[in-house]
Length: 326
Image (spheres, rainbow, N blue to C red):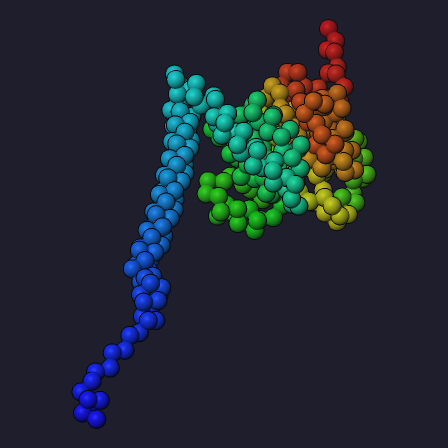
C-alpha cells in the first residue's frame, strides 16, 4: 500500500499534439488573414475615393470652362466693336450648340416633347441666323432650348396662359415672355379666312402696323416695342389647337406673316404641327407655298422664308408683287 501510495501516475494526452498541429496551428494565421482583409478593404475605399475625386474635378473643370465660354461670349456681345463684335456674331460655340441639340433631340422620343426631326430642323435655321431676333409663339418643354441656341440675341415668348408665363419666368430668370389674349376658336376657321380675304385690301392687308390693325386675326395687344422689331426668325408653336374650342393658331400665323413683311429684309417663319388643318390652311393662305423651304421642312413642321421691306407684296400675301405702272 505504501508502495502504491508512493508511486506517481504519469498521464500523456496524445490529443494535445493534434490540437497543437491542428486548431492551435491556425491561431497564428488568423491575425494575418484579418490584417489582409483590412488591407484590401482600405485599398478599395482609397480607390473609390480617388476615382470620385477625379470625376468631381473633371466635372467641375468642364462646368467652369462652359461658364467661362458663356461669359466670354456674353461679354463680347455687350462690348460691341472690334474683336468683341466678331465674337458676338459667332453666338454659341459650335460644340455647345450641337450638345444642346443632341440632348433635346434625344428627349424628343418622349411624350410632350417636340419630335427629333422638328427640333433639328429648327436648330438648323437658328444655327444659320443666331444670334438674332427670335419670336416664339407658345411656351413648352423646348423653351429653354430656343433661348439657349439664340445666345447673344433677343428671344421673346408669347403664350395664352399668364400663370404659365409667370411660372417659367420664376424658373428661368431673365426670360422675356408675355401673355396674349386670343379671341378666336378653331371652329371659326372658315369664317375667319373669309373675313381676312374680304378685308385684304383694308384691315387685313399684308403690310401694316399690327398695333393699330382692326383685322379679326391681328394680335394688337402686345407691348408696343415688339411691333418695331425686325424679327429674323418667328416660330409658331402655340397657342393650343387640338379641340374645336381651342384658340387655334390662325392669329399667330397671320400676325407672323404681317410682321415678316412689314419689318426687315427676310424672315424665317416656322409653323409646328403643320399636319393639322388650321396650321396648313393658314400657312398656305398667309405664308404661301412659294415661300416654303422644303429642305428644312418635315411632315409636322413647315419652314417659310418671307421677304419683307421693299421686296414685300403689299397687295396680296401670295404671288409676286404687282408691277408698278409708269
